Image 1: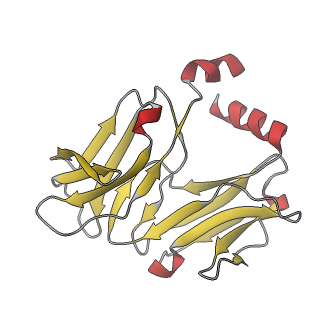
Image 2 (image 1 turned 120 degrees about the vertical axis):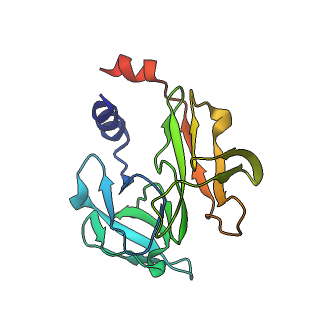
Length: 189
């Protein structure tokens, strides 16, 4: 059902979208990250680009597929897809660090559920974490996970987490919410 929506969206616009697997923006060092350009003409029409500090893009691949294995801090940065005509996709900011906030990289539809998880590299146990939205403490969760049920546009914003009782915190990640409701998605099928 979601793939039908994506196909319809791209066949109308012809524009690509950069997808990340796993679907999050923050990663630990040595993890694997896959980037792919999804569009109406497939990944062969697009290539993955990375913005350099000079603001000029660097050509990362000759196709719309890129695997980063293993990831290092130097892989942090803004990535996007670009075709020969200079058209660009959405930009995603990937961060490689030792405390991460796992949150959806792609927009979440209104009415759905989003789970944010605070993790520290080298630990598998759950620990208390403080969650922040737009710099303000919103909740402390003793499992390190915060779930937002029935998400709405007011939930959109910059989120980060910190390990309770320590200075360790994640970078901020943008949680995007789209107005496309589940009901509208059903109508497309």
